[in-house]
Length: 178
Image 1 (cartoon, rainbow, N blue to C red):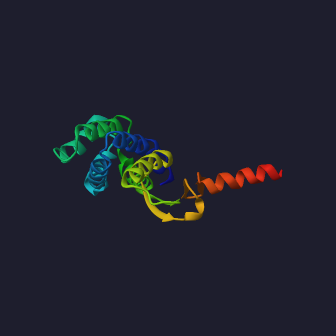
Image 2: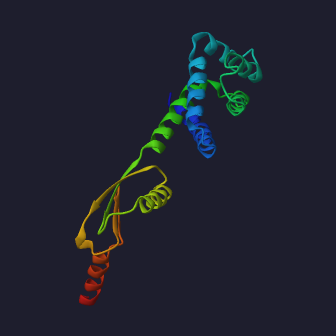
Image 3: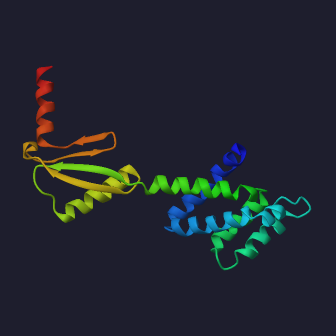
């Protein structure tokens, strides 16, 4: 089992990165789920493991069953797996793809503390910048703390960005004491 997981990892990563770049992660997840179910079928699994059949024939069996249910890109992916004798890894590839999808879709909880309320435009720009920086979706929760004087304090995961006036004054005070 560990061997299939090892084999599946680079294929799942490549498929996920392609799907992510083309904004169709859900479609790929559904297609891989379907292909995985087909490949896991007892009769299809027997065909896939039959040494008398060529890789192309094995891939064509899957493609024939999935005809019209998967995109051309997913068909090409299945052909690649067949050519590389990796069709038996489809369930493990689907499983790893789902793990990558779940990791990507996990939104970061971000706390933004400001001296004054932020406008919708400021929140949208901040959301965009934080999504880029963290590499995943963010859920922003705002809080007002007038003692900051101005600026923002941003907390996400184990990261703290202190861009507040109070924070800068504290740093200046520390450096003058040193």
